[in-house]
Image (cartoon, rainbow, N blue to C red):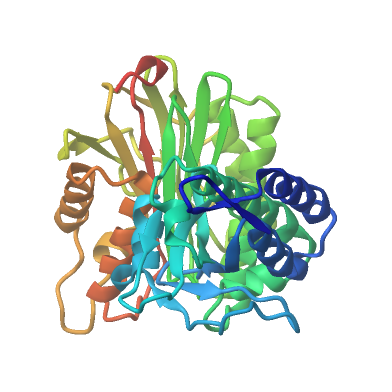
Length: 422
């Protein structure tokens, strides 16, 4: 299991540890989703640990929920969900850092908390209990490096295997999801993406009851395509409207259609599908990730906001057209295309009216100023786009006294500059 080095401190059997990580890659790639906790726990034992517990972030990013395998609980007692804003595990999730948690009890195991990420998409944290604190006193120690590899492999397996069962998805839900919200979450891309060329973060609230709002993006060579939709009404019909609009958008985009042709395709699809009795507002945009040149079409939607240096520069205006599907456009008149040359480090914020217009009973609206101020403070604190969005979401829900009367969605894009210079 372990050997003793000349200095007297315990060390991990490296050959056994390497074999265990290789086995996790092989076995995890053919495992059912619910089998991952046991495989990860077994691998952690081979790395010198006492136990390992996966904690998955809930749909609303409020808590980190333990993910056990049915019938095979970890060696230690399964903990309760951990609140992100007030726990060490939550700090690991927020700041993407590894933390070693010690106790005052002599001889008690230390807990190493490690982030679980699929690229920029934050999945949760991994808690690994170690009996020998000396193994992780140095962040570059063999055990520390092995545990980071364990977390990386675990993240990849969670992302891969979640497509093959409901265990992982079910563990991310703390309350029942409506049918409309189920449709929406099945439609969405990952809410976060980061590369040296661009970063994107999205937010949808109320997470368990969202219906008509949706966001979409696609990162391709030299360009990122961006879209936000706000469908008429609420409930199942609104979710069906979102499916049609997003699917028409993706079909036109993947067919290589221009921005204006794509807008026309979405408009025609929604009108054909709903006979002019339902509509969706939208902004469709393209950002040249090499030059920072942004173009967009506005179909009756709130104007995007340009943020620079943590301050609002202006709203981005393009002659607003009618919402998609309303059936009143004149002939084949093209959509007006807006354009803006971004500067390195700029953020562009797309949002639905439910973000700024909603309020708690008797209270004031959330407002654009409050939204921009929140984002500015998060940027000043060097938070990631993903964490900035999470905090905006929590502030939004709190402002509405946990009862949003309308869907509220945000899509934030950050352009670091040519080649990711900024």
